[in-house]
Length: 441
Ligand SMILES: Cc1cc2nc3c(=O)[nH]c(=O)nc-3n(C[C@H](O)[C@H](O)[C@H](O)COP(=O)(O)OP(=O)(O)OC[C@H]3O[C@@H](n4cnc5c(N)ncnc54)[C@H](O)[C@@H]3O)c2cc1C
Image 1 (cartoon, protein in one colour):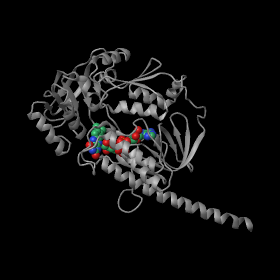
Image 2 (tube, protein in one colour):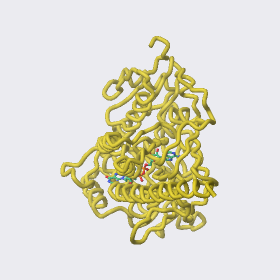
Image 3 (cartoon, helix red, strand yellow):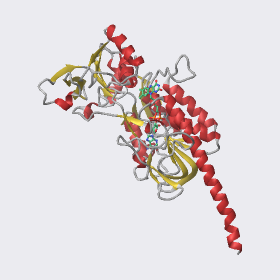
């Protein structure tokens, strides 16, 4: 016990990434101390000082060394360096650790639903958590449209319930990230970022999608210092500031509405005239506009974020043109560029499907990178172009991207995989039956 390094985690209330950090250490059986900085100014100042000025939780320390936020901790975990720092690294890199009938990539709603079904079908699924354990829904405190919860339910709570349900049916959840899948022979060879290798007869890709960024000046330096892709995680740190939300879909509307709890005024910059978001969210935003808590900047795009890691975001540069998409019209004399003071910026501009680990397989993707599946009616809707690899949830679905649709596709993928595995078993047993007859001749 005493050999274990000292792990400290600064957290705050309602912080999904803090929960992910704690879950990660829990899954490794590592004890840690937590300090909640919410409403504790001294602890907050202490965290900022120890974390080189970063004002975002969590901040993780191992034996006084700053590891960083969730992204840094998770990146270190991917390479196996976190285990080395914790003194729990294993020596079996590159060797086949285990064979499973089914490996599921992702513990979002799609992966966990697939795990529940696959566990019940005795397919002994190994479910890999990836760099966002629990998936996107862990970033929202308020899921009001998932059937069966008339009062709504918190995203982390829904995901944790699903994890428990999947484990009850025999699914094994494992921290780690899949680096690649090799489909050149069977079983599939599934290589993890930490070097471990698994083999599997079937794979369900339920790897979802990751938050997009803009690639504009100021972004890299200020991410975590006033720029964030998660309002529920970081909004409270900028209490009393003016805040800018970039985007025009459901996530942008939800985040802007949420941020009114903390902001002086929330500004939404959207590059077009019309929002893409559901009417429900647009109506809620308009209510807040009437109450003076939100202002909408249509046909406006963010081009630069100014500030410093010491003092956070100071102001932003925006461009505006009534015809929309102003950055495509920078030469148009009607495009106006202006600076605008805000204390925090939140990106809510959609997602990129996570399919890198399938790059060397023959699965096909569309122009945006979403995984192509058979679709249509009847069985096998979730099959990709590689027999034995199935796709479910936001990694396939560029259109609906909802928890309930991800769950639906997860169940379909598990049922399709079960049929595939049964057919494989039947083929193996008939081959075995045929073999001795040939030998007897
Ligand atoms: C802020 C926010 C609020 C939302 N609110 C709602 C709502 O109220 N209602 C609603 O219906 N929907 C909501 N959504 C949408 C909903 O969260 C998604 O549609 C749903 O989570 C998609 O589930 P998924 O399992 O397909 O993917 P994800 O949730 O994206 O999960 C993907 C999983 O794959 C893992 N992964 C990725 N790459 C790898 C890899 N290489 N190896 C192993 N694992 C990997 C990730 O770590 C993660 O666990 C919201 C989304 C956001 C961002």
